[in-house]
Image (tube, rainbow, N blue to C red; front, side, top):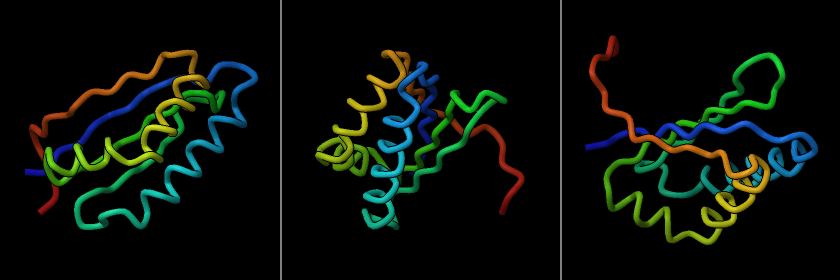
Length: 101
């Protein structure tokens, strides 16, 4: 069964460009990677433009394991970790209600 992972972080001053580059590179890789099993969305949060929320939708645990083995996934984690001063949090979400079909 598919599930979502919520990723949140705040970019520290002076690291905005590195964070933007990391997000862009990651999304470029993600676009062509297992489109039936993986979706990734990036949102900004707040007025300052330094807070971000990402939502990953994964088909199953096997997809998450394959994703975690990708070199571009590891590079993204390292770059965003640096750009956020190590404040990245990831939380698996559990769907309780859905208004869609």
